[in-house]
Amino acid sequence: MMKQAYIDHFGVEPQYHIFSPYRVCPIGAHVDHQHGLVTGFAFDKGVDLWFSPSEDSTVELFSLSFEGVVQFDVQAPVQVKNHHWGDYARGAKYALKKRFDLKRGIRGVLKGSLPVGGLSSSAAVLVAYVMALAKANDISLTKMETIKIASEAEREYIGLTNGILDQSCIVLSEKHGLLFLDTATEEYRIIRRHPEMPPFELAIIFSGLTRSLVSSDYNLRVSECRAAAWNMLAYTHQPLKTLDKTFLRDVPKEIFDMTAKQMPQRFARRAEHFYSEYRRVRKAVTAWESGNLELFGKLSFESCESSIHNYECGSPELIAIYELMRTQEGVYGGRFSGAGFKGACIALIDPSKREAIRERITTEYLKQFPEYAKTFEIHFCKPDDGARFIAL
Image (tube, rainbow, N blue to C red; front, side):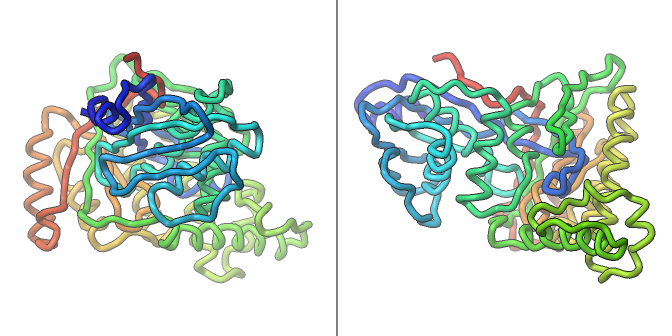
């Protein structure tokens, strides 16, 4: 369908196809911007970009998910944001031009395979654009360079104060293992599934709401985490850096224990989430290495509890889904996906219980929120490899 749409629009066949998957983070929520430890999977739904290099510096894109056509020149000065889907292509151009001389644009068609909300679709789109513009300009990027450029585009152009979790999961993941990443050192490894681990799939449960992280409290929470770190350093008479260079990872847990009652409690709760999530990721890695999916899932539920009570995110709709997951047979564990402001929940599930999970959660959720009957969705997915070119 997408290939034919490209032919119908441009009159020729596309030369390349990139698949950039969505991602989930089962444990390690809300800590990458504080240089924490995270885990993640990419899965077999995502963004497809069919494209060809332009003969000149023009970018021309259309989408099967959103309306309108995007056009701009990669050699022209970076334009201001238009606050629509074309900003992500301009953001990729912005970040690449800081490093490389771009001479050729692309012509392409884009489509996402799931609703927007909680799966880092924005990061998946940015990764696809970075890869496509690099290909068109004969630029060779390492995986970590792709991650950093896409993350920089989202921070500096789009305006989301994120870390590198989303882009790392999208680029580095492998279908047969769990990504474990230290966002401070950028060291990572893929931990293969234990041979005795029971089978599992990922349930992606959309509340029916959509949200933009830029317009949510996401950036506020980042500032609160930094303020917590600043408070702890100040109370213990340690040298201070500017707020944008201050991270909770740089403050030992012992200092938090000494100062937690002195600082405003909203800041203390943000720090408590960071330190407890650090411990949970360590335990989760051990559980995964030993094939203990039950413990891994339990830690994912605990991560969500801390997100609700310490990080204070989660709409009534997402909390309702989370409570249903906790009592549903066949669900090993799960949590909010993305920042937990509207969006989706994710769960690790027993594939043999798939239909029972779908039926009960759908029925019980829509009893509470019948207004989402037309937009509530559950999808079952499998872990997948990271962003890649697909052979035509």
